[in-house]
Image (cartoon, one colour):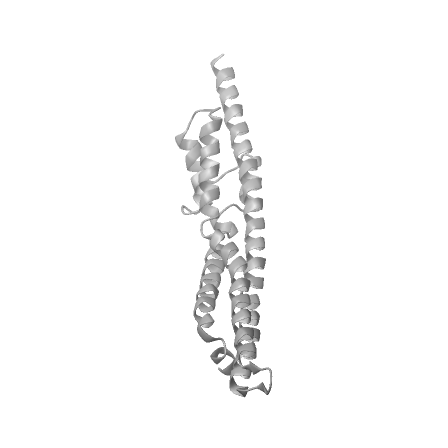
Length: 199
């Protein structure tokens, strides 16, 4: 408790940053699981043309992808496909920028506390008699160090989590594009088969 007592008013913005970082890290981690985005098994089934809709969760990206192709029989509407992909990417990235902001501002909040703490230290220093107030000196040094430590403790995991989740989204995007290409190929094959049957 003494550690937090010497962080002054900076404990409030740093606490807000830490709470937001934990919330968005957990929320995005759960939102980017395979069972609610794209699984390796689903991609394999798409490429093998063996999709079983009954095994796909309705709240997943896999289900929305299948429904998109079922509801849009147009074979070559690339703009519509690009809009669908962009919409899904926006959903995946929702709230992720908060982690990036926290990773950037938390060290600066700590640095501001450091500057103010050192200002208090030098404000208690008298050129003729040294430190006139030992309590102010201790409080200033503690503020300078503690806010820096807290800022880095928040920024480092936030930055790591942001990088991890961004990489996960990149992988999902690649899998999504592969699935779309596979579904297009399946649609072309079915179209060719129907033409041959009519002929």
